[in-house]
Length: 511
Ligand SMILES: Nc1ncnc2c1ncn2[C@@H]1O[C@H](COP(=O)(O)OP(=O)(O)OP(=O)(O)O)[C@@H](O)[C@H]1O
Ligand SMILES: [Mg+2]
Ligand SMILES: [Zn+2]
Image: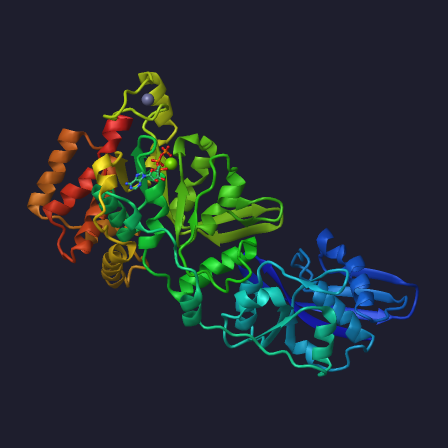
């Protein structure tokens, strides 16, 4: 008898409904899976056979043909185990209700019949709901991440026989649902706080400006000056996540398999800090069955590259495109995949190999040639994508000892939120959200300077020898500084401060 069960194939974040058509007939015992399955799907045969037997059902020797339709979409992984097993059990009348056709099923089987968790449950639910599916059965362990989606019944099961009993109306499974508000209330808050950073008022101010406008930034300073400590706290002052942003992040982590089982949805902006030995494929995404890379795992959050010059130069160069576009396209044999990667880029570095060039604490022992070579690892085009350069000098002992209360991340975040609201309102017709995304023509429209400010900028260009590429960056950052003061007009103090965030080019790169 022929039976059909629904499931879904994911290509990147896009979902395709798949019909698992099963035909079981008498005849020479054989088992075929057709419809573009890859080897991982073909391997399922033995697993399913034993799982069915160990769940207490007799399969006998029969001719089984499974077709995964449509055949033009490649099927990968183990999520088809459950729908294939259910299709077989329906074909041999162990499942005798009609309702299997309207329910989408996903899940990997283990030999004892238990269901194992799978990657991508959240995007599958979102896509299934879009395509009119009302019910979905999945491994119990995946239910938390999926239950944030409303309007679709999420049913979790421990093993194959539980699904069979449910379909035969012997038992009920209660659908799971959790609201965004509940997640926010119960979720773990970001644990690092700026109140732990003593002194460093200038650096904190620069980081606040960066967060307020979504600007990429580079921290330069000697070892132990606090660069890593400060960078790690940046997510704590970024604007709160909206539900839509949180879903975007969680979908990517669901596919990458980096979600914690007890976390239904990610409520904090990601902070990804890959080691400098990372390959380009792991950074931007790729590999045999392409997974999202670090830049996509950092979507709507921060990508932090600590000790920037230590990274392979080629690896850094591949960053340039995604940094500009906010999306990354990964090519593979059968078509390409696109993942979002809209992140704030934060990097840190020492100013020279020994770390003390330009420092007042210790003498630099590097030759000019060594310094030039070291700084040269950061190419012009990459430097060009960084709006704010921050020099970090170590705090004095006196400041470290100081017990006076320090401003908390929450207090800084309130100002950041206000500045972002102004930007959102201003750019509502422009399809951008923050000053960092201003294009040259938008800079012209929104970053007009009065005569005095123009003068300051001109003097800075001539006297400091600022590079042409610094020009647009300065205007965008000045716009953010004005927004932090809720000032409609960019004023000369704003321009002056913004110029201050671009003058390390000259000191360290000499151009
Ligand atoms: N302003 C500060 N307030 C409190 N503690 C600080 C401060 N600056 C540095 N520290 C302490 O010094 C430690 C070292 O700082 P951190 O690792 O951030 O330095 P770094 O600039 O990243 O150095 P490196 O170049 O060696 O990586 C921190 O973990 C922290 O304990
Ligand atoms: Mg460090
Ligand atoms: Zn040095």
